[in-house]
Image (cartoon, rainbow, N blue to C red; front, side, top):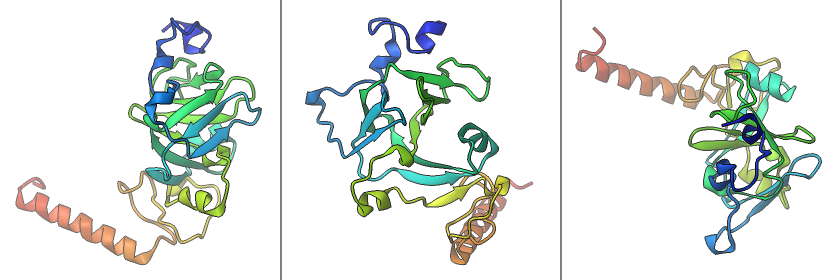
Length: 207
């Protein structure tokens, strides 16, 4: 992909990324039921969401999110790429690959408005992480649908948040529960790990 296409400056016919989710514009016959509207700070980039609740909603405390958002943590909601439809400005986007520190459209990457530079989403290989603070919630129930369910990389936090939510030291379900995580969940996780360890031992995988 050349640098112009990577920055979204090529024509519709040449920028093939515009024809694929999450950037493809849904047609009227796609049965895309828009439940939410969202936009960046300047309003040049606008999109709709069709899913009522995200697949998951998390607060991430990793140092990359802290730096990229200039904030103590990031609130992110996970959606399928087909759950979003840009109503304006999908040609006004810029990408950043935090691994190689490049502006090429390489997955996974971070997506921003090219004008006001508001974070729009993190695009993964299969899913997208959207930022609920961009969504225009119409009522408390809509906001509740996006309520964070856990903290990730809490071991890298710069501030304590004693909210009673599960707090994983790294990736959720793949690291240790720490701080004020619900005690029952901690016990449940430990029981599950012991059961898995016992199964590996029976199969001789722990030798």
